[in-house]
Image 1 (cartoon, rainbow, N blue to C red):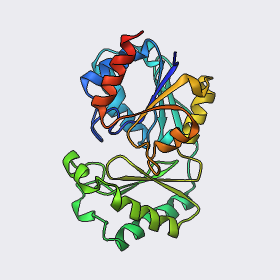
Image 2 (cartoon, rainbow, N blue to C red; image 1 turned 45 degrees about the horizontal axis):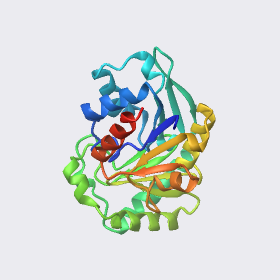
Image 3 (cartoon, rainbow, N blue to C red; image 1 turned 90 degrees about the vertical axis):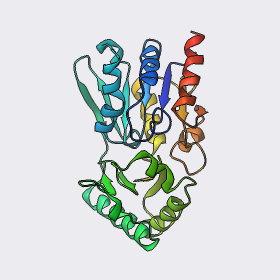
Length: 254
């Protein structure tokens, strides 16, 4: 029996950058009664609240159940847990200002050289490159772009593969990973989901065999692939409907 269910977010628990559905929320609440639940994603803390926690509350999750929810933010380089009253940051490993600047310049230069800099398509107040403290994230159309536009921009990852290749040439001391629908996450080598999952093992005092991971980007170069390489049991899904199907099967045998 597994003790921990860990999840990527975009395209695994939801439609990219949107709150989880009632169906997923209710399934996660049921899972909280049996497992430690650990979303791990490149997103920032506020997005975890909007896309997951707020939806669980709307579906009547209890404070006791929330103590079994662990938020591994920015690929697990930040960790938050609920103490029964509020969310507490357990750890954070931020980049320096100089590192953020070097990554930002390399991503912008790479995208502009390849004619993939879509600043004219941004919504007011949005940005293409975002400092998420322990990582920097490139989102080609910004965070506020519509789902349809995001899906259409780089469905085969070819644009982002070119940006990653060029950015790596400009800033070889950093790692660049493809994630979500239009995103590239940049970080110090080793600060990917291996870092997050390793800390998950330590914080929850479990072993690899105790974890089942769900992700949609498990192919080499995808931001879920490091979890596969760790030897953690993984279910590859195409969307949140696949995840819901798997969770129903798991709950059905408990």
